[in-house]
Structures are given as structure tokens and as C-alpha cells.
Image (cartoon, rainbow, N blue to C red; front, top):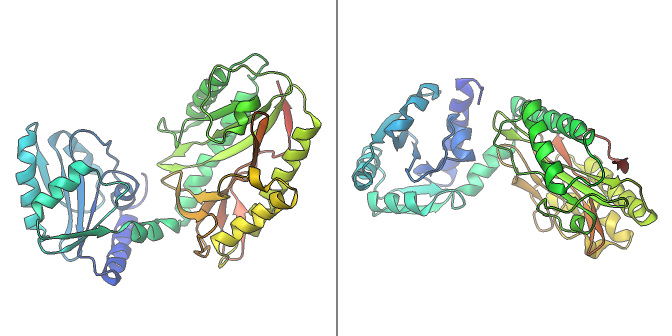
Length: 374
């Protein structure tokens, strides 16, 4: 992640301040978004444990295999390193040494339950038998949910890559092509346009009745005249991601598809325009959902209006009922209303939004009209 070292030090200081308010003595992190956010390093989860320990007043420590030591040349701040070779039986003792050096016994240690694996958790429990482990995910989510100007630019680039890739892919689309073939072509174009190979998710390409499944997996079904075609895709740029959806008509459009698409397009427009500082996420969901409910399709909008995105495709804030956190400048999220008619077709239109000081703007601009392809 090409960002200045001072930025990571600033993030650590912000986290330490937040830890103080929660009376946390330390944070431990597995490789993942939080780990990368604080360190600028990316590790693949494997059978070898990797851990970052942050202890205010004592600094940062890293536990990792010797084969990963070269990565530390890019670490933007000093850290105490505990490395090991290819003998797993040595792990418990190394963890004990690291935890003792960082003074973690009898301390309150925060972790991310959705990220920390049982492998590392058990080693941590053995290393600090009297420590109290608690959920620190909300603290880290709040910190990451406000994107800096540079982060917004990285997300914007991921959006641009995704839009350009789909535009090129659509030029290859033809009747008789399978969903899987179209998804493969889109994957190739994403890489050609500059996306990192680790996409936020594999593209969803769903045609005809398959488009009524919001999370359909591309299969062997071939595109036919009159099909609705949903394409949900995204790109990754320096770790930051985009997430977009457009719905097309294959070969020809029919009256019912036109009508449903117009309703979803209106709901998408309402959601894109409504975001502003102070507006509760649940209220943004309500404003978007009302358009579809008023049109009589409420029961067929079966998911939330959107979700935050950044280092993860799904992160805080969540644009759904019951999530009353207010939007703040710098937050980035999706607006993706949809209508899904079982055994017939589905329509979804999704854009990526950033909250400004006075409102919000869409980072995505690709045509949202019902376009005939093929």
C-alpha cells in the first residue's frame, strides 16, 4: 500500500487514544484488513501463524515465520520481531516470550472475532493465561470507516478500473455466450485495466431467472433474447476496492423489465442523492426502500440498501434498518436497491458513494439506464 509512513503512525496514535477510552491495554491482529490498515503490510493466512501486537507505551511487536522477514523492509515504523522456523512445536514458547516481553499477562486485550483464527487465539490464551480477551472490532471499524482523501482517491481508481473493464467486456458479449464465459472475460479485462488479481469478489453474472438470485454464481446458462442480465463486479487498487452492479436487457427489452428497472433506477437515484452528514444509515435505507415499497414491490427487495467499502468489500457503515449510526464526511458506502421476481428476473443497480462536508457524491458514473446488449 503506497502511503506515507507518517500516515500509519497517525493511525496507531488514533487507535491508542480510542483504546484508552475502552480501557484496553493491547490489540492483537491477524493478517487482514485491520492488520494492513495499521502496518501497510499484507500477509496471506496460512498454516503458519502471523500476529501483530500493539501495546501503548511499548510499541508494536510482530510474530511471523522466518520466510516472511523480507516483508518487514516495507514496515513504516520500528517493531520488535519474534520469528520462527519450520518447527510448529516451538510456537507456544515463542508466543509466551513475545507476550511476556510486551507485558500482556493480566491485561485487557482487544481482538477482532471475525478475523482472529482459533489457531492464533489458542496460542494467545496459552501465552497469557490471566489476560482478558474482548471484542475490539467496533473500535477498529469506527477508525477505518472515515476515509482520508488519499483513501477516497484509491477507491475512485478502483471504481474507474471496474467501469472501464465492463465497458470493454460488453463489446464482446453476444447471444449464446454462457454466464461463466462472460464472467471470465470480465475477470480478464479487470486485470488488463489494472486491478490487482485479488478481486473484492468474483464477478456475479446472472441471466434470465438466475438474475432473481442476488448472489447467483455464474453457470453454464447461455444468454437468450429477452433475458435480464445482472452484472455485479468490482476491482481492487492498492488494497482498496469498488463494488458496482448494472442490469441489462439481452437482445430486446420487455415491458415488465422496463417497468421494474425504472423503479429500481429511481430508488438508486434517491439513495445516491440522500446521503449527507448526520443522516442515520437506517434513514438512508428507509428513503431508498420507500420508492420500491410505494411501487408495490416492497417484499421483493430482500436485502439492505448498502454497505461500507474500503479495504473490505463489506465493512462499516451498513445501510440497513436498525443501524442508526450517522453518516460522517469521509464515509464510503454502496447504494444498491434491487427487485427480485422468483423464476422470472431480477434488477439491481449499485453505485459507490462518498460523504462530503455538505452531502454526498457518487464515485461511479457508468450509464444506469436499461441498455440492450448482445
